[in-house]
Image (tube, rainbow, N blue to C red; front, side, top):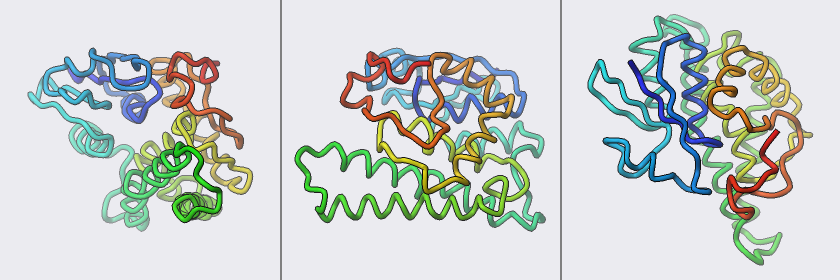
Length: 238
């Protein structure tokens, strides 16, 4: 049995969704932020002293693992039976590999950098650091929007773990920041709605974050959870 430790309103939503899409039996343990950082319940899990989430325990194999991409790779290779991945023989294999690694290699860092920069007090709008972070985020969003203009999913015609890895940054991350609008990126909002319509996505939400309102539309919250006492705030709830 595989145990998935999930922290609410976090990147670990990817792994709950992964298991639901694959239809693999697993045990879900939900953890609540305290009120922003990892709670003691996560730090007390054997092998997880830093309180990482997602974090899985594969009791049959005797291993523990963190990092979203590593878990996606591990689970699909070992238990996925070829689902949610493309083989080297596929004409879209290079696109699959690119977008799978783009998620945490470029896309999420662009959001994280912008989030941090926007928290710096009294930073002028025309400051170099703000300009650079905004340009990096805009470029990342444009690249994805352009890709989705002619492709239903990031890898092409087939839904894969590249999509699972990327959705968090474009949705839930906006509760933390930045408050980016998708009015100029209609293909991203179309893709997000297609992802949200998947039964596996809906089951994952009900099990992992039943109170959370999905951010699949153009507009983002006006206020970051980082400045409103984390999960004690109410604007992230349905």
